[in-house]
Image (cartoon, rainbow, N blue to C red):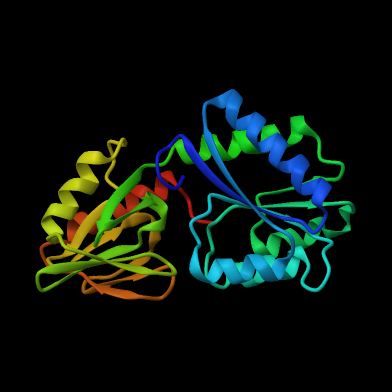
Length: 250
């Protein structure tokens, strides 16, 4: 989750005011019962959400109505997936005919209208459980700070007296050495098996995003190649094999 583990920021996009109010009521009830501070932002149509999305993508969940005027929820989700492949998307709809289309935008779940409080709460609980099982790291970016889940960090590159942290859709400049960042990522992690390793003196990579490794370089899931030093190859290769034996790739 963005920010502290007990905060949750949700965007609700629905062109029916009554549905917006009902969803906000349910979200606040769920958060109140579980001690989670809910920040719910309402959008009356897909256009307003897309406009806001250009400036602010810091949402933990998007709840999209499918049947909306102008741009519908499915088309809206496709646009969002162009810049963010990981934000959870929950669809609400009055018709089950759309459910098969959810695979192309990696939908978290579908809820049929009228939305059941119990089914919504169950979906939110599963989302919260999955996030809590993953490490989260806080980085200072200038005068601000950004919180990133482990899975969102692809690699870090050392550049002179700074480092560049890369996610799938953004990058952040960090005024820290790569050695300091490596120490922070490994000491703060809750798991015994490291997720991040130095493949080269100038690169720190997230093992979960490696699709292949050779003697001189490795390939990430998005096609980016990073160098692998001679001293790092053996340990990197063993860690890659161990991780992918435990967590088979689809």
